[in-house]
Length: 137
Figure 1 (cartoon, rainbow, N blue to C red):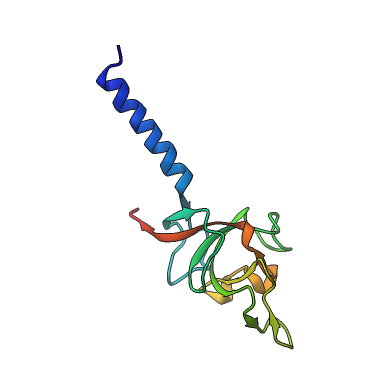
Figure 2: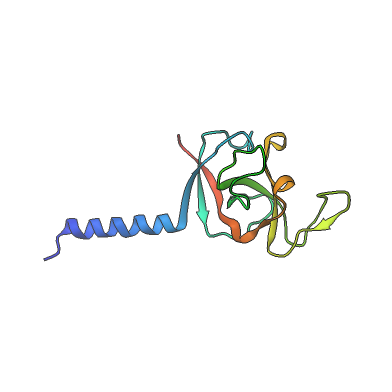
């Protein structure tokens, strides 16, 4: 005989599993997204959004997980999408277009951000999720 407690426990476990598949809680590490987000802020992101729009803040896999020389960046980064595939941007002396399947990202605090200026265009497949909101600390 299945008890009510067993049913409630099963539903809770299934719900928790569904939530983990759909959402990600991440922590801001460093000053690159100030003043929007601050070091230590916890953020809720929706997983699986490989089609990010301009202006959205995304969590993505660092295409250079060991970082660039002199950097201590980890495997995940948090930046704002500023251009999407086909947009014209100025990464060097001449304008160019963001390649298909890629985005350009910048930190809100450009002076202290490891972003597309250093990493180049980010493959859209590296995007893990789109930030929805800051969570209470």
